[in-house]
Length: 328
Image 1 (tube, rainbow, N blue to C red):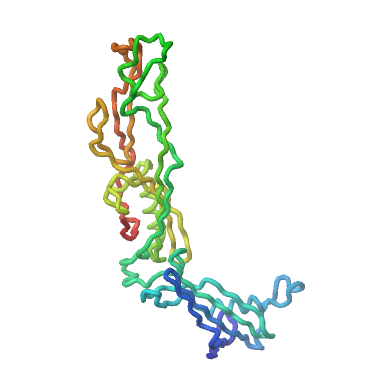
Image 2 (cartoon, one colour; image 1 turned 30 degrees about the horizontal axis):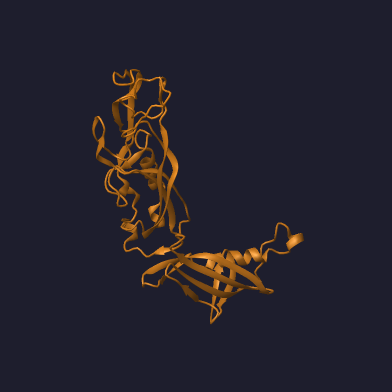
């Protein structure tokens, strides 16, 4: 049991840590918690602030004790986790209740939790910027929920109705949803959204870092970006950073969640009458159609894919600037 005089926020007081009740530790694979229990005293001669609503609540001594608690409790403390690594527990919960005229009981909880990004591990050289984030990430993904319009098939098998007036089927049936007015196409299920949450040390997240994130999302032409090298174990050209969401206090680990669009690259894929197709996943594939007379069996005007265009819209960017741990 310890008793210490202290002055916080202009209030002279003392605290006694309750031995055997205090310093309880709860440790799991992913989290470490420690609870402190104190009795708090304020000098009888000290005047507590008057309450704005004194007629209802009386003197504002609860505010005085709370300010006193905030003045004496540190923002965080280091403890080893279950694997022996020192982790930073941050102040996560404070409860006080009155037990005497000038005595209050305080229960303060410090916590590290890798699942929520609360707290963090001790860096080797934090001020040199060697460590930006914890050595783990949280991953979520959404597959589907989007569509892509397909205008051309790899092949098509056509048959005539028994009462058709056509002399035969068109010689080219690769246009999907073709009519005299154009090619409607087919909306195929698509979409692979990858959400990665990194946990950053407070000194790594500032306005300059926020500017870097905005540049990696927008690109120099405000048309988006893609990874210029292997990132998250995925080849260059396959990932596009869509958004970044995060925030936190200056004493806490700051989680930032990134959302990426993932599309695999295409290499030497057979494409009918066109040369084999090679393109980045984040490039855009388009086919242009023309109306031609089918001099085969159908003897009619048909829509035929005549030009293939691979559009490069997004800009290659260095996603290592996100300072995420290596993930495969």
